[in-house]
Picture 1 (cartoon, rainbow, N blue to C red):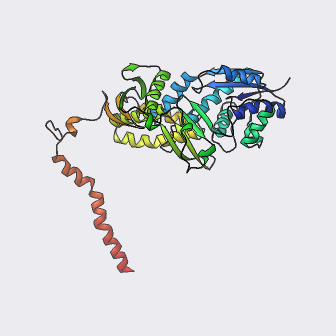
Picture 2: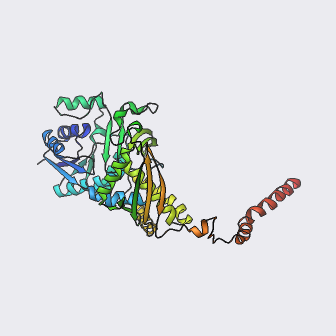
Picture 3: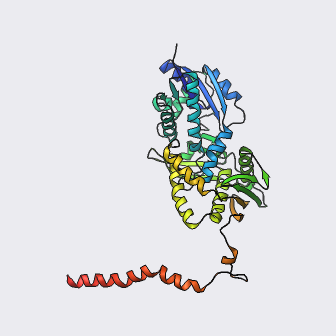
Amino acid sequence: MSEKVVLAYSGGLDTSAAVKWLQEKYGMDVIAVTIDVGNEKDFTLIKEKALKVGAKKAYVRDVRKEFAEDYIWKAIKANSMYEGVYPLATALARPLIAKVMVDIALEEGATAIAHGCTGKGNDQVRFDVGINTLAPHLKIIAPARQWGMTREQTMEYAQKWGIPVPISVKNPFSIDENLWGRSIECGLLEDPWNEPIPEVFAWTRPVEATPDAPEYLEVEFEQGVPVAVNGEKLSPMALIQKVHDIAGLHGVGRIDHVENRLVGIKSREIYEAPAAVVLIAAHQALEAMTLSKSQLRFKQMVEATYSDIIYNGLWFSALRQDLDAFIDSSQRFVSGTVRLKLSKGSFRVVGRKSPYSLYHKGMATYDKGDQFDPSSAVGFITLWGLQAKLQAQLQPILEEEKGNES
C-alpha cells in the first residue's frame, strides 16, 4: 500500500503540477485538500480538477467562520499591520490552513503533508513551522522548493501531462486571496518602478470610476470586535463583506509596498484589503478614545511584535497566546461607534463615540463649561521640567571644571 500525502491544493499552477510530481517522485497517493478562507465562490470545479489531475481523494473544508472569529478578530484587536502597511491577510490564513491540513492528515493516516510554496517566499516558513509545531512526526514535502523548475518550465510540465492551469506567460501574476485581503505579485510587478496596470486590481475601483459623492460608514464595536455596520448587526463574514463592498466601491484599500521578507530579501507586493484597512483604522480611532496614553503606548509595542509573530509564522507559539491575554484585557472598554468618510480612493475617521470614552469635554473645552483649573499648570510644569532644568544648569559646569583640571 502506498504512503499517503496530504497536499494543500489551490487549483493553481504549482499545486496542480505537484499532484503528478508527487506521484512520479515519491509514488505516494495524493489527497488534495482545498480550504475555503473566503478565496473562492465555488470550489466544485477545483475539487473536480484535483481528481482529474490524479488525486485519490479531494476534500473541501469551509473554515471562513473560524477564520473570521479566531484569526481576523484577533488581528483587529491587535491592529495588526506588518511594517505599518500590510494587514497580513495571507499570513493570517496560513496557520489555520496548516491546522486543517494536520487534522486531515491524522484522519487519513497520512505520513506527509505537501504544499506549493517556493524556496524564497514566506509561506514555506508559515506552513513548515505550523505543521512541525502541531504534528512534528509528519514529513513535509514542498515540490516547488525541490523540483528546481522555473515558472515557464512548470507551465511546460503541466502542459506535458495535460493539466489545465489558470495562468499564462502573458498573465503571469501570482494571486492569493481570502476574506481579509488579496495579494498580487510576479510579472511586471517585480520591477518596483512599474506602476501596477489596471488588470492587477479586482476588488477596488480606480479613482476615476468611483462615485462623485462621498459615503459615510459607521462601524460599531463591542470589546474591540466589530459587530454592526450602519446600525445593522451582522455576522462576522457578512460584516467584512459589507465593509469590503463599500470601501472597494470608493477605491479604498490599494496597497503598494516594498516589504522585508522573513527569508532576508525585499519584495514588491501589491495588496487589496478594503475591509481590513477601514476596520483597523476605525478600531484604532476607538482605542484612542477609550484607552489611556500609557495603555496606548505600551500596546503599540505589543502590536508590532504581534504583527511580526503573524508574518513570521509563529502563530502557534506561547508568546502569541501571552500577548492575546494582554490584548483581550485592553479591549474591555473598547466599545462604541466610529464614523468614516470614504471618497475617491481615500477615507478618514470623522467621528467617534463610546460610553467608556476617556475624552472629557469639560476638561478639553476652551468655551463656557471649562472645568480645567489653569492654576494647577504652574506647579505641574515646574516639577515636570525640574530634571531638565537641573541637568542644564549643573552638567555644563561639571564639564567645564573637568576641562580646567586637565
